[in-house]
Image (cartoon, rainbow, N blue to C red; front, side):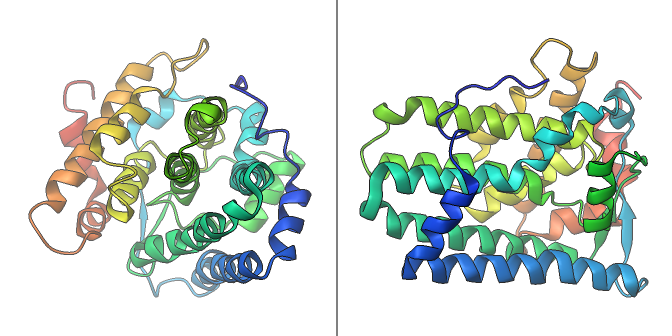
Length: 294
């Protein structure tokens, strides 16, 4: 199970963070817009697609390496923390820096809504899913009810946690407060890695979804999540004791697939074209990236 890198941000109250957001007019406006965007772009859009199938193509994006990652219900708590993860971060930032934090925190909130809009550029053209085993435990039943499981590529879970640690670090650097926030920055980085691993352990995503999300984040804001940062992030996945036996293969695949998306994007055209090409023929990706092992 994941080990906490720190508790400064984890100790923040989600309720307290929401109260702070709603208590300020600038933050409230950004927060409400973010919330409505999430409801529209994720929940309403996905349920509409589930209730009226056939209007948008759906691609299964499972990968052979998914079989090397055992299903583990113990990771569900880490997985379900992905929303609270970024809300607590806003609360911590506001608590530590007060009025100076309002404008950057509002931008942080707005950017979360923009993530959903950005990812939906792919979803509205091609949906994606994976083989998700059923678990009768209450938390999993809740997940299955809330998520029809049609928005796998790119993974918004991974996009959100990457955005949280990179945006927080950027805000701190701009304030000249990086040294005094080394602990919280590391805590967020480790938390992002934990949640990324958790989505694979609870089978909410395939390993294919990770590089797709990383590539999307590079397109979204390359100055915060460029190729070097992305490769470093992927190289730190599944390093703890008890990780899958083929963790090295998983990391290697994620990095290779990310770089392939990036290379394809350099030929010109819209940023989403490499992902849409993949969704039309995911088996082609398996051949290229796994030809030595499968």
